[in-house]
Image 1: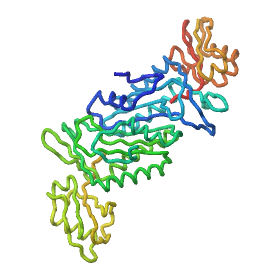
Image 2: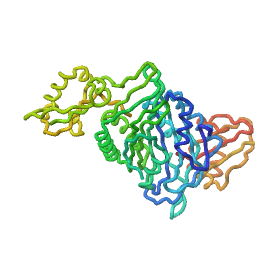
Image 3: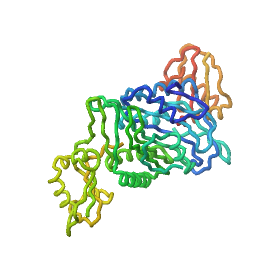
Image 4: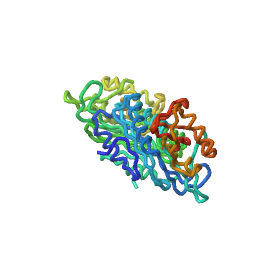
Amino acid sequence: MKDQVRIQEEDFSQDEEIAALKASCLRMGGIATFLGCARDFSEGREVSRISFEAYGSMALSEMKKLRLDAIEKFGLIDARIVHRIATVSAGDNIVFIAAGAEHRAAAFDACRYMIDELKMRVPIWKKEITPEGDAWVSPHP
Amino acid sequence: MKDQVRIQEEDFSQDEEIAALKASCLRMGGIATFLGCARDFSEGREVSRISFEAYGSMALSEMKKLRLDAIEKFGLIDARIVHRIATVSAGDNIVFIAAGAEHRAAAFDACRYMIDELKMRVPIWKKEITPEGDAWVSPHP
Amino acid sequence: MIDVLFFGPVVERTGTRGLKVEHRQGMTLKHLRDELAAKYPGAFEIVCLAAVDGQHARDLTMPLADRSEVTFMARFSGG
Amino acid sequence: MIDVLFFGPVVERTGTRGLKVEHRQGMTLKHLRDELAAKYPGAFEIVCLAAVDGQHARDLTMPLADRSEVTFMARFSGG
């Protein structure tokens, strides 16, 4: 079975990830997921593709810590995080987060926590490739 | 393509539902989903299977209204709701809700709203089949 | 005639999935409810929602048209 | 030697993915930061996070061990 936390170039399957998540326990009543996708438009500009770069070793270890933090903080049964590092087109998958709990409130809270924290903690950067040229997306500090 | 809102006996595929959701627009940046599954344990009792019954015509029309309400209330790009009416075993899928928006906050809020409202508005009942006998789950008013 | 339907936990207590009730001039949802509650007291202990023609009906003073489809339901447990 | 790494938007401004910097007795993260900021002022305009050996480093007074791997990073934009 694939690792619970991964950085990979290739796309992923929600069905596979959910099956792997559920395999751990038959007591999971609610699974909340977040799927982040590439958009064809950002801050007023058309975007053709998006390219990602990561500080790979740190990104993976931060994602693993984040999963464990969420499991502990929200009492999850299990959780998974997958982030693609690739050049993707509009509509393509970028990131997938799944949180499985006995009840839905914890699953939702944990899923949201993981994507919010991932954006703050995990060293990944995106470059938007537009008809007018490329630009790194670097939110102002 | 399958309807956005369905009541069905058979299982569903998250990959298929997400692909259908994304097909409507390349501007979807965040998709939040909720998957409800059968648990092997409920309120201190072992549960072998769960059987669902619906007031079918009303359940479907309430689910369709709920989808439109969520799209309007949260500015979603699209949403899907699928509920199985069947006898399922522990670990099996019961309900799937997906909310796609430009940004993640609306997707999460809408997804949670839809499952919370579904439980209150949609005429579906579940019976837990346990080694000690069957019991309809009827939360106290 | 009013078409009365029961589902799930209510059927278990009425022993029937539904019945026909004669429509009367000026009949409200409350009249129908009271009549059926007298007939199926055990079932109506758990009835807490009603629908008329597939729409939630929260106002019991609502008059019922002939040929309505009325449901008295236990709290939902879907999802 | 300290191994300095740059990524993404910072590389675009430093023109390099990294460099080696001589380790000095008592050297802190701030010393290294100031030295590199003088060398790559444009890049350090967008640097707002640092990591040492793959761990977030928020305390600039932190002493650096020889052979550390240090990264100065722009705000993340993953997810």
